[in-house]
Image 1: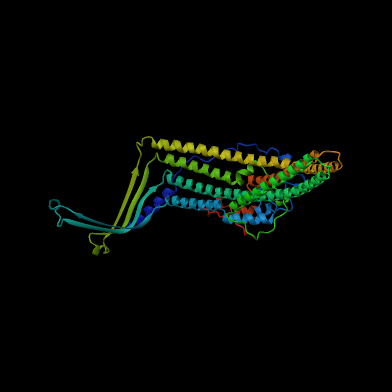
Image 2 (image 1 turned 30 degrees about the vertical axis):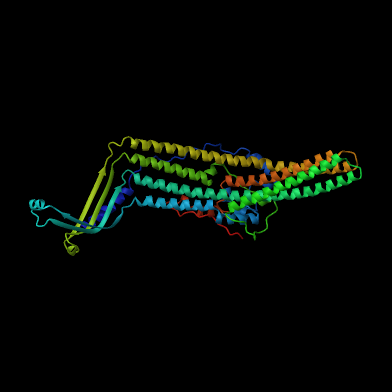
Length: 517
């Protein structure tokens, strides 16, 4: 075998040995989910949903088995909200940061993976040595100065990964990359929920302002009536004062609501990443029809595969396992090789002449004997971090379970609450009408009218707030089940956009953008 073939064969063999090195990382075992097998209030939520079909899949929605496979364009049915979500996915800075974090993690994985292969490059060296006259005479040399030139293809110090140190470092970097990719999806799901909640808050404030304008108009009419009756000697000054207080209270509440409306608009523009366009499509009627009534819930075990924050925590746990293998490998010998194949000559003019071939091959082995306890400390640290990662993974499952359970508790009660408030509102309106008739007839004092008016406004405000809360609760259920990553529904669509489960280095995830039209 020629020297050139020997060096190439040595490099290839070293790479093969390294890639086939053993791993000292523990075998991964997914921790048991520390939650119940069924959600509480599930049956109550199904009964409370009633005609809305909250826990089924209606014909109005694509047939999907999991809420995570339900696209946000199908879940949110308000054209204006769909347009706003598309704008946020384009402009929101938090999402941009998350995308760049994915790209940075992918680059870091590529850097670490490159260490598993040898680095081969062109090398050239020139050495000039000058000796004293006595040294030259003793050595029998004819000149006091000597030169040496070398040029060729060199193999840098390359570690043979017999014990899996580099392999586990690469595994850890890969799992962190996948965790970062899932973190981006969590950011997107959270962002979509923030846009929806900010939009619903704005719509609710607009509805509240409309209610107060009508209330103000009604109370202005009442005040004018009482003032007229006072001028005619029918009502007392106390009645006028009470009517005036009611009118001023409505004015004060309207100004506060207008302030809330402006603040809600500012909050929406923050998550959008810019001002609201003037050419947005018309919004749907404010109510529960703005979101899809059919949200498939599934089992708690589905969250392990559908919630990106749980998947992220599991990738971090796998990375922690790999780091244990890295720490264990530090106890074993480190073997590296350096080599060069090329030409050597004492003069530049003769460097490329025949017969000047040269090669070097330098294996090095290092065995730690005493490190002051740092090796054991690194292993203890890796094990502690692995236990922390287990606890974080289990906590992410518990948090997800609690979020779904809370949303189901809302689904079990909001419909009945809204029905009760709707009935109470009708009764309060009737009471106000009767109180006004009795006051005009002189049967009751104006205090009865005032009390009935205050009660009606309170019920109307409570009805608007409960309607807003029920909308937000439905969005929270969708988010808690992992929905919001896909733009359009379909499990196949999700698989195509979820390369994290594939072998090798997946492509960096990009946000699922939508046009604002």
